[in-house]
Image (cartoon, rainbow over all chains, first blue to last red; front, side, top):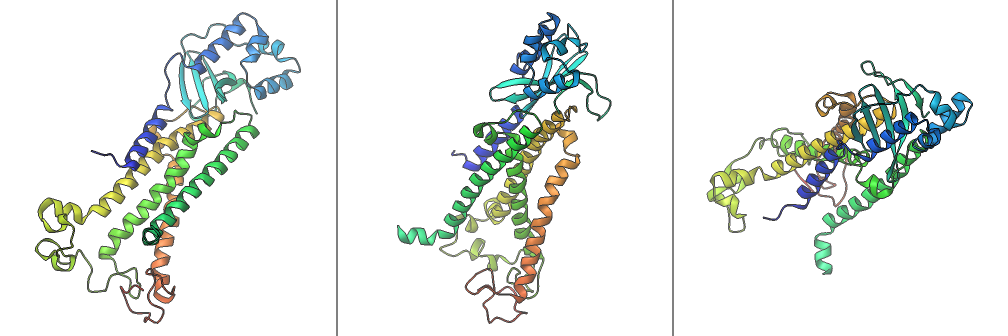
Amino acid sequence: MRVPRWVAIGAALVAGMATSACAQSGDPAIDRAQHFYASVSHKDGAAACADLAPEARKALEQQEGKPCAEAILKQGLPDMVGEADVQVFGSMAQVTFPDETAFLSRYGDDWLLVAVGCEPATGDEPHDCSVEVG
Amino acid sequence: MRSALRNHSLGLFFGLLFLLSLVGHALAGWQEFNAVQTAEGFGTLSLGRYLVSSDFAVDVTENWQSEYLQFLLYITATVWFLQRGSPESKELHKAGLESDEDQKVGRHADERSPRWAAVGGFRTTLFSWSLTLTMGTIFLLSWLAQSVAGRVAYNETRLERFQDPVSWTSYLTNADFWSRTLQNWQSEFLAVGSMAVLAIYLRQRGSPESKPVGEAHDATGIEG
């Protein structure tokens, strides 16, 4: 039986949009976040800053009045963040660790961190993050 | 060939307009999306990635569902509801599903009637409602797609504000879902309602959607 074109397009659309909302462990966003926290724990500020989005780096440098590589190590970020979970919605991702939350944005084929050091949110309130864009 | 084009020009004209509009929408939507992302310090998307994004999908499907709902309601409402003087209404004594004879169903079918109109039983009942069922199915699928894509796009915005995402069931009661839905519904209902009433007193010479120019204002169910 030939499936009508609009049914095929609709099914593909729904399937595509539904799968874009969830992601498996080992996701590039998780890899990026884990690399960032590993760099922080190894006191490698330059490597950690390379995982931040340009606007996040700029915001941190303006906030601290120091180069990113130096400022990022003074944010009191956790050394070990544990197992990660990720939720991807369009061009944004949220990586959640047991005691830490990070937000990432897609830049081309890559993911970069736009907020780190985020404390658990209360209700519908935004997370309070030690480094964030904007 | 030329005759075939002429005989199908209405469908082709609107098909072409649809494609041009969709391309224009995609390009304008992509530019706007990236402008907002850049202004807020987030990453931008390639055109290819934008075309399969929830942001584009929700904008498309919220319009599709409302258009199909508009025609679904118009097709079914005009079975029972009347509008004196409107070419969009049936004649005032014909409200309802009408007789088998009027509808050329079963033994009243003629030699040119579709086979399913003549055979009777389930097939004739299904065929008798096939337009409503098809428009209703497209409406429901489009609305479902809007809810799925809308939730992803809404959560994308929430993550940009560093808020936690919401579930699909929670999104169904969210103001964003109903704002997108109702802003489209109200415009469709206004357009259809005003068309039914304005066509009582106004004319477009040559259009089957209008009464003939010289037809009386109170003449109902007459198309030009």
